[in-house]
Length: 81
Image (cartoon, rainbow, N blue to C red; front, top):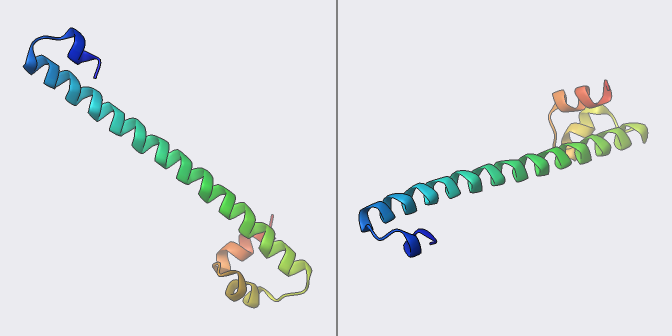
C-alpha cells in the first residue's frame, strides 16, 4: 500500500491499512449491490415482455404464471400497465 512508503510508524501504518481496507470493502459491497439491482431490473423487464407476449398470443393468465414461472401478482401488475 501507499502508506508503507510514507508512514514509518508501524502501528499507524497498520491503522491506515485497516481503515483503507475497510473502506474498499464498503465500496466493493456497494458496487455489487448496484450491479445486482441492474440485473434484477433487466430480468423484470424481460419477464414483463414475456408475460405481455404470451397474453397477446392468447395464453391464459393461469398458464402464464406456470410457463413464465412468475407470480400471479406479477402477471396482474404487468398486464395492468
